[in-house]
Image 1 (cartoon, one colour):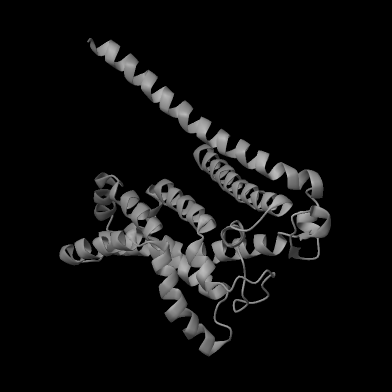
Image 2 (cartoon, rainbow, N blue to C red):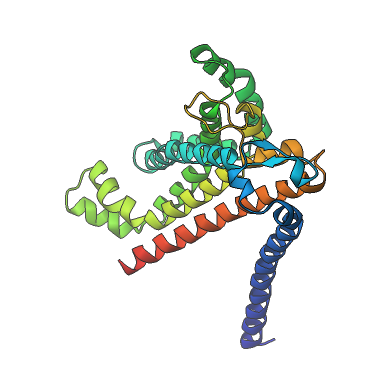
Length: 288
């Protein structure tokens, strides 16, 4: 087989993989839309934002379907976790590359990789028996938005730390040599040369950690209290969209079950908005 034939075959295989990946996403969206259609038809979109509470019934006329408190709970937990984990992850990667002794850096990197492999339910167990009682001593009930942010921060920290580690490792050595020739300090090199050069990889890490924070279920379900309300403080219990689906799907029927698929559509919408924002910011940086 000639090289040109091999190249053509590889190109067709890659095209097929790309089409398959896109088709899977389309099929997931179609499935969510079909399952959510009965609730949207019988209740309409508006009731998912204007009903007084979330008390669904198998018949839309007999229940209330407000998802807004869970949207806010999801947003606050995700935003808080990203704001905490991002600087910690980037600073961890900077420590590995510029400050840690070589022997310590190897073990520290292994520790971060280990954190990435721990199942979410284990984080949830730890949060339930350790973190929630600690918060309860400060401000009852303990199971709260703060507990969710803390657990999510620990869970997504390895994602941004490992992505930042890879991004910093890919900065051309010539940049570092040039900074050294100019007499820049270690911190000056990191701040003025390395981080700007690695921003594309860092931004990708932020997108990945945000996606994981939005989709996390078990740990959040175990530590956040699962009260359907819009939180007014960090110590208020919340329920996220993912936790709501996990809690109620087993017994939901009729329009109640369909409304849970509307929750899934909203989660998919959040991911689409996240990707669109990333694409927009990325293009702006390229053109800038």
